[in-house]
Length: 525
Ligand code: SF4
Image (cartoon, rainbow, N blue to C red; front, top):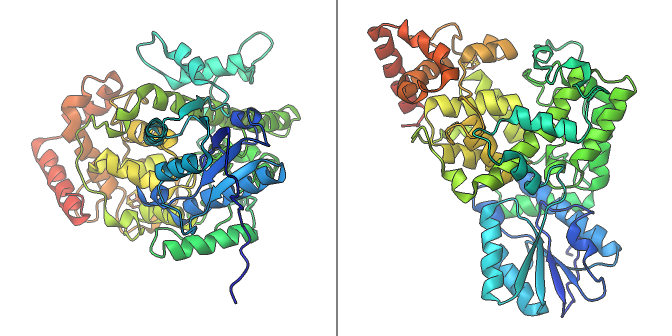
């Protein structure tokens, strides 16, 4: 006997005056389109399509999170008398394409207008435009109001500046939002930035409090089964899926972070430790990016804890910097730079992505751990992303589009507006310095200082060439050798490049040859 489905959309609507298309990362209960709807005449449209999990591969936890959160949101809307047309992945009529499903919805409901909040990916925005134009229905794009800085505010800040520096954007946002600003208008504590206090190494004692992990309910378990059977060979592991799929769960995760881990977040925010994928990090990025909660809700909770004396200044400042600084800066850059940005390749790097990025099967202990965390959880915090996984791709010469595709596929919080500036720009320096004024290239020394990975590695972090030399060291020096000509004009690189002047020709040749051999061994060349 077949089991009764937990999620059963009715899809009985035959006519709509307005059709509100809600995409999988637009699950805000304050979605501006909802307020514009007449619940008796208009229809909300949502759909699950294979195309979105296959145009780049998608980690099973990422796909599960999106589908389950969408179903929970549709259920919430239905309970509030919104008329919802929801096409499930296993609906036999599903064309498995976002554009074709929208075309089918337009055909069936004959709306006068399609409303959609600004998409988080240029590709989707373009597809919606084309579909509505072909169907001769007007498309009204609504501003995404789930950010603390609108795109017009960002553009007004950016206009006329030669360089867009996150630090100046961040300071302006702090002033504008009156965040950690003293009565005299100066930053709380006298400094804008407490990074110097936030580089502690984690020593495994005292142990980190375990973070809140949502328990999958019946609807999520149903999605897990569907995802498992639809993509049996997809990357990642599903058994540890615990991401918030509803606003209620996201708020619980926020409370848990602020009450148990925010106080130590600052000092250990750059630390890495084997077996500690989460440390004191908030784990809120997927909830923020799906719009289950807002940045200002996070900031207000954190501010209350700081004002109540429960959180030190260096921790709250680090958190505020991530939420209203980096995150909103990256979004502004994505829309300002436009669709060509994802294809930038300023350093003309052309290497393949090693197979083991998808399996973590490498004898480099740092990468085995960091990639393993991503396979296990669809997540790692910002330092493994930037200084291990992204850093390796940069210094080894991997083509930026390939590593960007990997990040887009593997993280539960990945949407192109986030990944493109973070990976193509900040991590791979492929935009030539739009996001970061110099490449985030580092040798094994950085990883040794910030983690316990090197002690148990097959390679020797003290060696930069020869037997068992740490590949991060070989590739770091090779990166500087290969790109010296391009980087010399960057004043922030001059001191670093001076180290190459001290190297004799033989040493340079040996490093280059060893880097080439490693590239062949890893399948990069
Ligand atoms: Fe990574 Fe090199 Fe350290 Fe090994 S020795 S863990 S490859 S940094």
